[in-house]
Image (cartoon, rainbow, N blue to C red):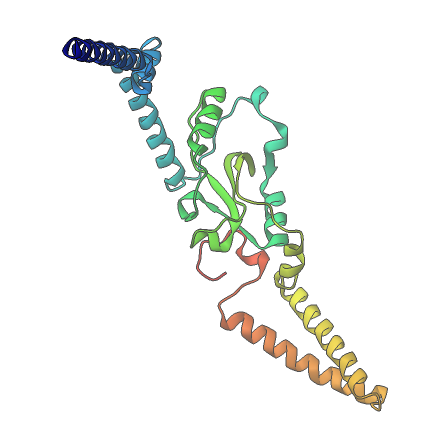
Amino acid sequence: MKKTNLENTLGFHKNELFFGIKFDILFVKIHTMNNVNLFNELKVERDKKVNSQQLMKILKKIWLENDVTLKNINKKNDNSVNMLDFDKMNSDNIFHSSMIKNICVKYRLRFLDSELFKGEYPQNITKIIRDLENRHNTKLKNFMIMAPSKLFKIKSPDDPILFAPIGNGYYYLIHKWGKEFNSIRRLLVLPFKNIDNLTIFSILVSVLFALIGKLIFPTLTMSEVFILFLFLVKGFIFIFFYTFFLTRKNFNESIWNSKYDSF
């Protein structure tokens, strides 16, 4: 009697274990069926629109176009102009060289061939250029860039602008990237616009220091303050001009389109 009860007990546990294993296997199969292989899903989605051979042809064409566009940007200018479709040009993007010069002089910038540019182009620059070329049914060349002097030597996050010549001293603005200039830049570079500005700046600094001298030594007479002012003028003019040219700097009006190292 005890043996029969033991066998019945064992039989129950065996059946329970058997069905438990079956349930686990079924659960694993269902779970596996519900798993999604994203890589395979992406391939299926891609193959709906393009097969592998067509995809490689598209990529090869894009890379070749990008390579040609970048080579054109970095190619030496031959002074020829670009022929754009007159009706498709945006008048907001057309500037004469005299206007560009005024801005370069005002903010101490340079306007040089793109082959001299040592900064970084935005990642989408080739697409921007190709879209413009397709719109005007042409191939752009002889690019020019307006940017701070240091961008033609080292990398910087400042604000370059890419132009293409369209004839008679006019340039078409293609793209502007980087961060905006602070308006205070105009004041900071104002003394270096030309020799007159640097002289006036030296005089103003001399006046300021003469007034400070009067505040520090209130017993000074106006004649003594004037003599101090004349002494300061000679001193500051010598210091500013000597330092300016010693560091191989030049005035904004002279460097805006200069390719030489003096900046």
